[in-house]
Length: 390
Ligand code: 3HC
Image (cartoon, rainbow, N blue to C red):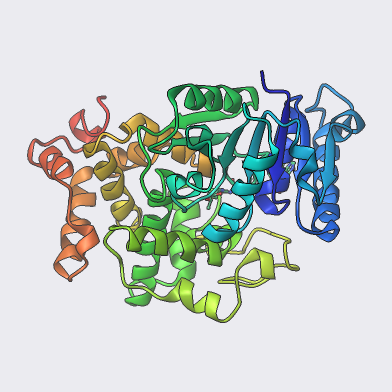
């Protein structure tokens, strides 16, 4: 039975995951390299728990929840851990070090999970002597608010460990989506990056402006944030890391340099106070102002992401419902991506894919299942069938 969870890395994701674990009744240990990081995490967790308490969303007192969390720069607090979640920066060598240390210190029964958004779980597992007990447990920012957790078994992970992790996600009041097997970027970030790539292509080719794209995302697709705004929120360095992992592991690239340029300028988004937009101070997000009107066609904006989703369905990694669960609970979409595609018309989506593919963008080549749906007049809501039946 899992009683104590240790989180390694107290940054944006780590502190939030630790908070979620404490809110769900677990004893929690947070480890980081300096007391500066730990104290900052302590303050952020306190602020968030107090906010939830004041809104009447907690059954316990804020102090009781906070008292369950211990902080330390030493891994000694992992000695009695049943489950560990690593959330350190996206660097394989660093992650391997963390896993080797956890493997030495945590008890033999402990499961070691990584919250990586891009690094292959199997590569991380190879740093331990318990490869079958290493798994991906991918949370979304902000972890306290976002309901989704992707559970990703590596080629070594045992079925038991996968089941325990799915169960733990439920005990943490999250909605788990379990991948059949590991693919770079998982489901969430493959779709996320495709949305950002098309946004970028539209702006760099002069078809739209950043504000027009973001206005369409917010006002037409009803997403909580614009796409460039979301990239700023997640961190442009993180975006570029995921992008690189995808393209170096076989996903066709979309030539576009806007995100990379921002990283080169050291403007990483909300965390540095400036990215595509400016924020009140480093680390402090506030909603960006956008025009109400925009000429951007939402069918074009989601076309590449829909193609990616249909690739994952074609390869039996997930089904349409799973894709939509990921986007609703991981990104707060008001409805699923494929539900949106069905509403906007698969013939429309297909038309844009063909058009952009013809300009030399390999990634836009429509998948066979999308082509088949269009040929069979399964165009979505208007013909009674698309990804779903109506
Ligand atoms: N603790 C407690 N409560 C919090 C909180 C926190 N840390 N952060 C926000 N909240 C609460 C607020 O108090 C507010 O509650 P209320 O409605 O009762 O007043 C509610 O959440 C909404 O927050 P705000 O009013 O401050 O701001 P918004 O309405 O603009 O919502 C948002 C902010 C929830 C972040 C929303 O914009 C959103 O859902 N954005 C999309 C986020 C997203 O897509 N995340 C996934 C990124 S991808 C990822 O993480 C994967 C990685 O691998 C890259």
